[in-house]
Image 1 (tube, one colour):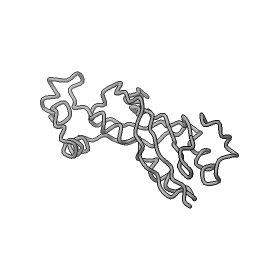
Image 2: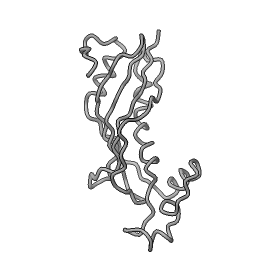
Image 3: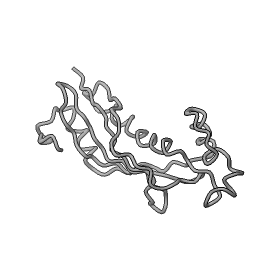
Length: 161
């Protein structure tokens, strides 16, 4: 932890969270179906043909398939954390605090399987009862393990009174 606080000096509510976050975690795989890409395009208004037009992608893109939106892949980095972080006793809520150093490194063709690799970067005290959790996230294409997206994800942990 870059805050200089030892794990034992953390509030009790954060000790289990720190232990969970400190170990590298690998999510289960998620298939990026064309229907999910289309739904994301609807939600965001990003209807670029490289994402939504399989017929045009056959002749217009290397590999002949549409590709997932980078931000769709980035959104997968919070999926398993939401349930896990909210489940720790003594935590009132967890807020998305933003991202650092986001990079979209490789395209992910529709139909691909991806997984998320997570690792603790830091857990730092902010205000009384509030802690900033920074995690390194990587979205990998399964089974090759090629990294498609990397980011530092920030979550504000608010302790219960």
